[in-house]
Length: 37
Image 1 (tube, rainbow, N blue to C red):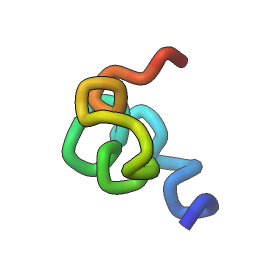
Image 2: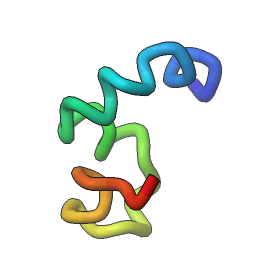
Image 3: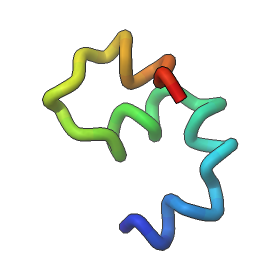
Image 4: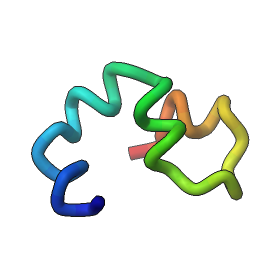
């Protein structure tokens, strides 16, 4: 999954839905939508 999510990094960051699904559920949706990176 990391290898697949590696190329579409800008895409996942642009779309909060996929990024939230890829990111662990430990973080709230707000953080997953707008990562500190």
